[in-house]
Length: 255
Ligand SMILES: [Ca+2]
Image 1 (tube, rainbow, N blue to C red):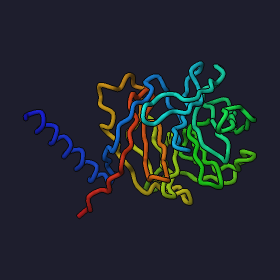
Image 2: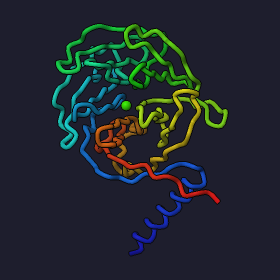
Image 3: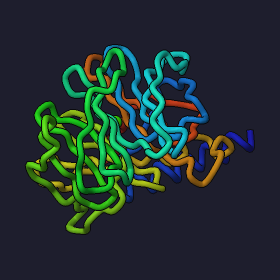
Image 4: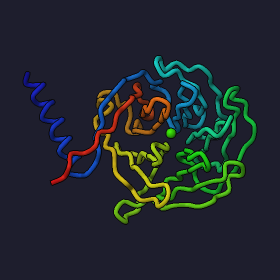
């Protein structure tokens, strides 16, 4: 009973802190297994499956993963000189970034056969699409909007929260017309206007993965996938043994 009271008080304090900061909280809808060795750098949901890009030199890969079991259904290793990063779908292809090699791999979405490579001048962190362009994060507050056919930059926005640039935007996902970006080494996801770069709000995922399941200081939140057909939002992290479907809860009205 004492534990329950403490836990309740902790949850209440977290909720109050979130409300005070104007951040949205979350509710866990489902918990799924996730490969605890996957250094997740990109996550998407398509055709009823998760697709995942994992990083680290010598361990980088492209994967198709079964949501319910976490089993890897299909995998394409990435050569050890590359550190794989963000992942997005484009038509019948999958596009995978690399961190510092300035090269992206374009794969056939079904066979995982590599079709071509694209080059870009920035670091590669996160990748998503708005249906017309690919959107790339590079660890700075800038988001680059790219022509999917050429990787040429069409425009860019600088992400700012009340006028202050937001550094280290990492994994991305387009959700309800907004760009969701998790911030490296934090539990927070920024909701960003694709038109202006303004932060529209924050989602605070503190406490999502129990502390005893964090295997290293680099085992941080990094992975957002959206299933538009069923309005489901999935999140995970690097080396996390769990992947969650969550529902974002609006903050209590401020007085
Ligand atoms: Ca994503």
